[in-house]
Image 1 (cartoon, rainbow, N blue to C red):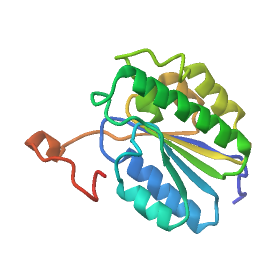
Image 2: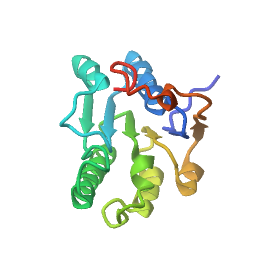
Image 3: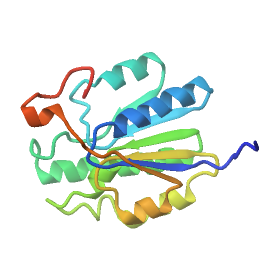
Length: 180
């Protein structure tokens, strides 16, 4: 079988659990094959500690939280500024050509925000341009709920995680080591 050298665009979306988990598993696989990996988390705040950050830093992988945290804990302007900074950082890193795999964790969530205007700080048309104009070899993974149709249409692979049953509905809170 002939190896394809063109980087792929993979989307993990849907209401079920496992989008980030799938992307991080892919990062582990890529690292095992010697690929240069970067993980950018759009919604998670650098003020909190996440299990994936702990382990990827131990492995020497750049993982960056660029978000302001939960949308209800900060002002819309704080979120807008965080998203603006995250998007600027993302474009710089993607177009640098330094990486073989970049994960844009929860970018879909950011693009689907409706409680405040984000299009001027995270323009959908720029995301679509980045998907088309990324370095040829780069694999790009985009996670998060509510992936826009335009984003899915530009992807090579779209997987939807579908919620069947979740312990949150029984009142269980996020579990350390499972959700964060």
